[in-house]
Length: 172
Image 1 (cartoon, rainbow, N blue to C red):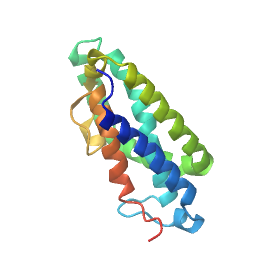
Image 2 (cartoon, rainbow, N blue to C red):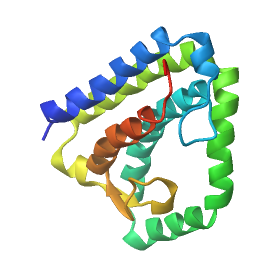
Image 3 (tube, one colour):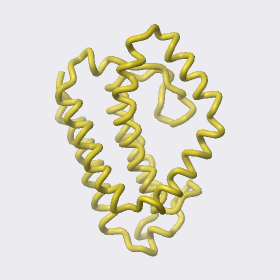
């Protein structure tokens, strides 16, 4: 089952919207605080790209974990859940440091490349490939569930992106 036209359109929209946001954002707007996070708009944009990178990394990881009994990924997710507090700090600090070190021009290129990879992978994926999954730490993201398939991750991407896009204060 190849990626549905709707799912493909959502991923392409993320890529195109991100590029448009980065290209049109005024420097003063990038330094402004976002709404409901500790990040500036620039840092939040970097985090929004990072969601795409997480999905790209999760696809092969999920394939690997799906080869083991469910208890293996459950134990792994349990260890990750136990590390939620340091994860939250790292998640915050990575966007702050990444936005400064790599910059948005680079994250824009990465968004394009990561989206292209995800689309290529999904176009060649079978139903069985899309159904492979693993337990994940649901407390790490409001749209995570205790067990997610690769198809669920592809559905998670637009939710994560739109959630954070609503927190941007660009042009306000």
